Length: 255
Image 1 (cartoon, rainbow, N blue to C red):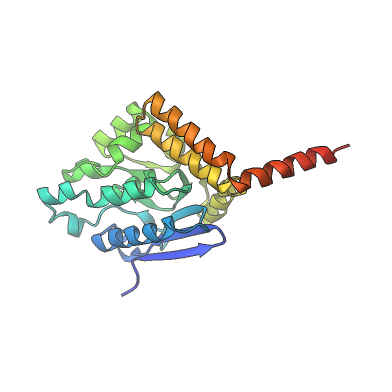
Image 2 (image 1 turned 30 degrees about the vertical axis):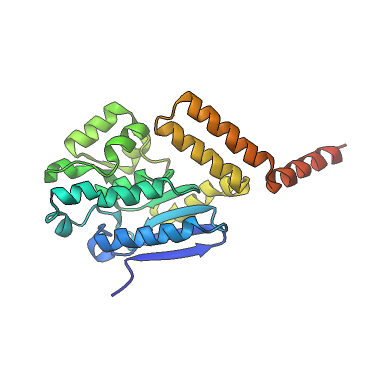
């Protein structure tokens, strides 16, 4: 049986490819376990400065949780937060993350994309949280991350109705960051990441951590304390001295 998740590291960018195209990359327990393992391995690597998540086959990023498994889950499974925990781990990934979306990103697939820092969508993309049509809710982070991106009014409409929006509408309401033809999604992701990868990696990492604290309701005092501690680390980092020395040398070299 083919691996349900493909992991590739090229340069400083890791790519996770959901590899269940025969079921539109539906998220089952095996895929959740594989995501945990891959994220755990990549979190520990100093040579990975960005992470891209995509779906195999072109027809779907991820069509949602695997209904064949979801149908049999009961109360105890809800408390386990099977999908929610792995999406939270992706959100906490220390480096910038991008969802490269073509085709369907529905239910758990949309929640997976929401857990990323950026979303680049092909024109074929269709996004939504149709859980209420199946008698459940978007309980793996959708009710928190969706309104944070699109605002409460749009989130209510999508979450209460289960509506699915196309790429143009997703861009209009802020659900995705860029829309390009499907065949250009990879290039658009690389273009988005280029200035991020050109920045100081540790500075980007600390900035992401600060933003995440703000998103999760840290107090002003907590945020200020974190800023001081993070800046103290960065003030001693070799990259700071190298980059500032290069800046000053370039300025001195100007006529």
